[in-house]
Amino acid sequence: MANGCIGIDIGSSSLKIAEYSKNKIHLFSESMPDNMVSEGQVLSLEAMSQFIKETLKKNHISEKKCSVILPDTLVFTRRINMPFMNSEQLRVNIPYEFHDFINDDKDKYVYDYAMLDLNESNEGHKEIDLLAAAALKSTIDNYRGMFKRAGLKMSIAIPSVMAYTNLIYLLEGKKKNFEQSETGEKKDEYCFIDLGHTKCRIHIFDGHKLSASRTLDYGLNMIDLAIAEEKNVDVHIAKRYKEAQSGGILESEGCMNIYNSIAVEVMRAINFYRFNNQESNLSSAFICGGGGMIEPLIKALAESTALELKSANDILSYAGNFDTNGEIFVCAVGAAIQ
Ligand SMILES: Nc1ncnc2c1ncn2[C@@H]1O[C@H](COP(=O)(O)OP(=O)(O)OP(=O)(O)O)[C@@H](O)[C@H]1O
Ligand SMILES: [Mg+2]
Image 1 (cartoon, rainbow, N blue to C red):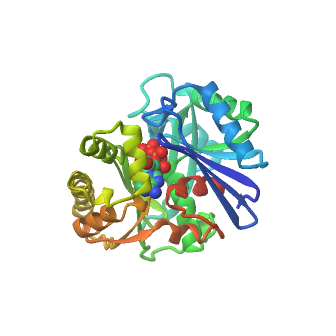
Image 2 (cartoon, rainbow, N blue to C red):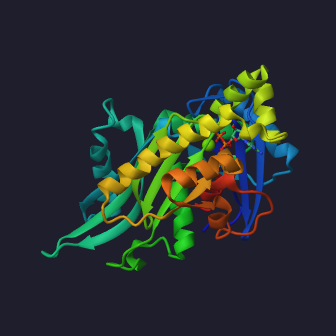
């Protein structure tokens, strides 16, 4: 585990930074200026460099090494089962496993993987189970340049599922070495529901292995619209009302309707997973993202999904001590401990 690294998650509503050193975590967030991020992607690398630089300075963050979350729109992630092979053979073979996703020149991409398991069939054939990721080289170069201009050295860029996997490893108290994982034992399932500003993302893991991911076009920006309409104010003002949570604003009929819509969509995704995984005993989920601060939304979700909803702070506590609410920082911390 790295000591002395910052994890960075660039969201559409806020920039999240987790400074991780000697089992202590310092968490910093800054509201994202308008028109900086769309669909998870940075619109101006120059402007983002400047914004990150200012945020580091403002918060007296001196650490230079950073691990970064890549938006789902810029990285392909998939589980792969392959015959056992060494790392050099994997380097050659993994690109072919992405042929369903990558139509243009596969050499334009960089590939990475995390080893999840080693299985042996009855016939004695060894198989490996991987979580592999592919991103355009140009994306990685752009990100590296963006962080360099902000005064940082990007050591790694990972998809969010890898950040969650890192936290599960911590929680399970397991080493990252697949050879040391116990075989044959039924692993706990972990579900993360990220209620972000523009999207709701659900990731379900069987032990540390990703089993399902779903992104819903439902976000907390819908609440801003409901408040804007109800109070006849601009959405920026409505967003501030929402964050201040004053005067029962989050219990209005318009807001309640949004919570119920989100809750129904999340329930459908969870039920779909349960239907396809009949042996699943999924009974709880960690709530991440800004939605973790909205109690009536959590209540609606708990009722619709029949899951025990836990605060993301519970899982972050395995990474170290921190002094603020951690909901929005889950991916940033997961990246910092990479
Ligand atoms: N105290 C609060 N009460 C209610 N909502 C809040 C509060 N603080 C932040 N939010 C809302 O949480 C959202 C930001 O959450 P988060 O940082 O998880 O989103 P994001 O990562 O920027 O978005 P996305 O993942 O969709 O790109 C915004 O809608 C913000 O207004
Ligand atoms: Mg987010």
